[in-house]
Length: 385
Image (cartoon, rainbow, N blue to C red; front, side):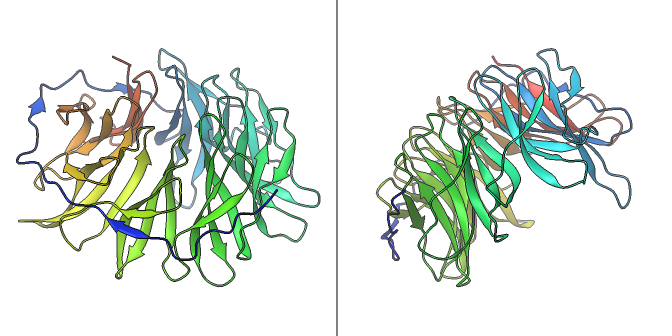
């Protein structure tokens, strides 16, 4: 693969901040979440990925003192939980992504209790993904609609490397960035054309990486300011966080490598989590309130212009966005915003408390978590509407 040397200094464009005159009103509370339950003996569940047709995968965990074992699980359309197969037979593992065909990827513990990258078929059968010669795998973190998988493992020297597995399972090492160090792949676009990841350079730098369809790699961010990967879209745009003037700042890297600071109202920190195909991204920023500095949910337009989605008194953050511009996150409790910014309170579990919405699928299925009546954190979902 040819390596395209990234720009050492990217042009920083600070977008204008556009505050709405008022935050849109809250719509009537919707039907509350559906409890996805727990495996027997566990105390916590989490949804980690949502498929295009509402498939849900995640973890069921024991949080007893001095232990934190998580079993890889999935839920059917009726919310029934079942264990995904594991390499070691115990079920211990963690799904990280699922594609439109219902194929999930992540990590599983083998018989030696070491993490290995794996793929789960739609029927739950598990396959270990091969390692580089002399190396080992760590985990798979992304999968395209055609079944191309990306993640990380080590080479024969023990260095962490970004890996790509083709649909048949063949493994290749992603092109190394021009700065030596450990690197991995974090996500792949739905069509497989772009891969996003990160580099921990031997020079002490922390950079964002992007690989294009030819396999060429570009470093994003600067050597003197740490940068972290957040999300990737089909155009190759990446959102993440970097440090600007000694503060954390939400930024977007365009397809040509320019870095845009996403607009904000003050000198406090911002963070961005996801970006959709139209270049609209979501996250959070801090504002002053009578109770001190609080986070609030934010949506940024493609040009970086900001809109607050809730007031400082409500607090929260925006965690995911779909192709129609619908946003899910937290505003007091779990919330859904439509493309116009109108918020719907998604409710809580009966007898429970706080809830949050974390993911939204292509069909509109929303997943997150809530405190249940037993006081534990349960995975929940809201069916597509």
